Length: 473
Image (tube, rainbow, N blue to C red; front, side, top):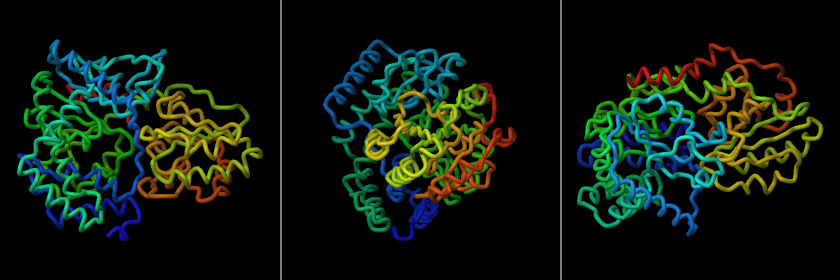
């Protein structure tokens, strides 16, 4: 089967055919279709995207999580106040610095406008918890205690329904998708974790009693969404990164329409611009749930004056993705070896939040001058680096669209699965470089690029916070 898949586009077409052929959404655990619990990671496996383990198995890191869990327990014992809005955050959201403090790029500009809120944080990347800057708005608690509790319960208690569904899905995934790591044991564990997370979150939501939950990446919050739906609490997802018709978390087709009411999806989905709304609606599943609100982060940087990098040099910002990393490193090694001195190239490599090891970049690129490798939690921020560059480049990233909206030309490196951002090439300021020579021609030929304001607004609607407040209230 895997021989049929050559790109992310192929994967999502195949997975829609697969789920339709075997009618996977008919299988329910309680009131909710269980296939969405597995779908995202199964599809990622088909894509063969090499996710880094951002929290390595070091003893002190486990102790740190236990410390967070102990703090959460103390807060629960003291009592949780009821709030109108529950905000689900991530430690990796704190990637911008302002007035000497880090802030959550998705929610902190919004929550100060809310009447009452409770903020709870996933510790998804411990690098951000070790950052040297305090947080502008500290979360009220973390998910650490709940994570430990759910892990314990799901390892002990399994009901017959979980076991029966696990047999079906394990057999189908191994036999039809050739993903042999999805053993019966693994699928049982995944379903049990979802089941118990729903139970634990239901208890927690009754304490906070919010009217609405704001979250990211709903495909990773299935237990929370199930609990919210059963308590009639509205869920609103905020776009993060690039989403389109091929995105693994959202690429449901018309087959799923008949099951929509039993699916673990948000009630509303706030996206950056009309471009993303139209992209998501192409497959015939998403419709009125999509609300165009903009991006407060983009609002900030579109109006912010950022000084260009090194004067008199060719400043290039590479934002990494989880795709073709070694090919990317090899490409820039050759480019710098042959052209850095001649063109005065200054390269800033900003790592993806899911990457924890900079050695893959340092091992080959540190031999060159004017090259810096910046981890996701380190300064300068991604948008600072992009806006301060003469050119932006990546394999396949939301940063292509962000660069264009910020008035910086962007170059696709077409190494692996770049098809889902290939429409960038059709936009003025978007380019593709298959060789170092192509790259050099682009950066030497393109002068004085300026984005059309209408196009920038098509990708990122302005006045995001005002738009969000209107939609929420």
